[in-house]
Image (cartoon, rainbow, N blue to C red; front, side):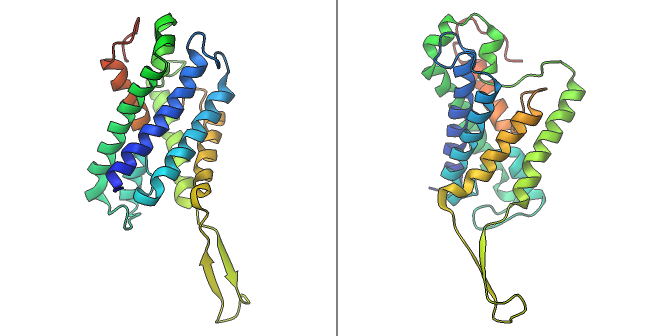
Length: 229
């Protein structure tokens, strides 16, 4: 798997599981109908965890244009991400993955879209919206939320084991790989953002997660849909 494919598949699965939990809570006669905000935030945290452990080996698992742009700006480059030259490839893959993920959620819950009357609830299973429509305030909320996502990600370090005395010249430090479970902190971070900062705009904090499925909403033949905002 190359970086483009990893970002595409990782973002697609992130959206399938993330928007899928929103559909399960908001659409009529689902098993999870009216499950509440805790279900949505937990589902999104786990969606990010799954998407990250799928893509991390091959692309570093950005899965988010904001993370890609921040990594390029901060020169967080390695064999998986070479900087600005890779930005169009990564963002293109993320957007396409977001669009396809949104389409798959619609196919999966198609019968429930048919019997759901609330067009805004249907849009909510694809994209976010502020509960109080003040665009400058919403911009600030998303700016802060995205910073609280990106900055801690850049601060995360791999666990390591130190051998020898602290003052010994023979002291060594070895990084310890955690495999797929190493992606868990990012999922917990998104869970925390949703719980603490998701109440205003729905914490998109990811253009591919919001704009990609919103494009899918615009082009899909969803029964009784409203405008895509």
